[in-house]
Length: 160
Image (cartoon, rainbow, N blue to C red; front, top):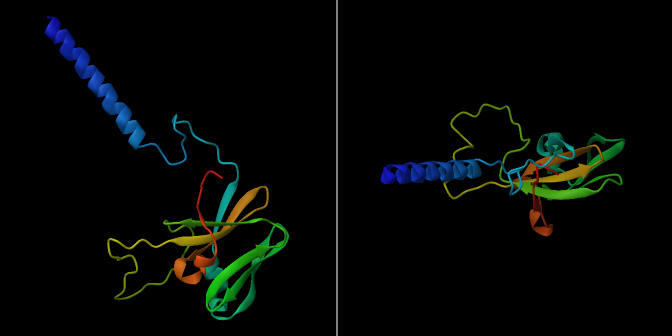
């Protein structure tokens, strides 16, 4: 009888540990170590800087991408690469991600699939983000569009 009780207690303990392990493995990145969700402080807006620049990416100079909270958003292009962005006196943050955040496309490519990559290849996307106090607006570019070696880039934090 005692052996049966010990087996039941051990089995229940193993199941509880397994459940805790599964819960920890499924915890989203925006939770803290206790499992509590951190609140997102700003509304995040993701725009494709590549699409907004269009053909201007081939022309050196300062190009207007639009307005943000009354400020003109501009991108500096040199040698086919974005070297910087500005939006009046709004602070800019340089972030990067391995996820495709805002790049569209919409073209049907025949005989070419850009999603086929070597297993070792990971494309990084870079963004210039502006915080206007209400929203956190990021202009995303593929790594081929950005002069990223000259600037330090922090990983994108969706909870900022």
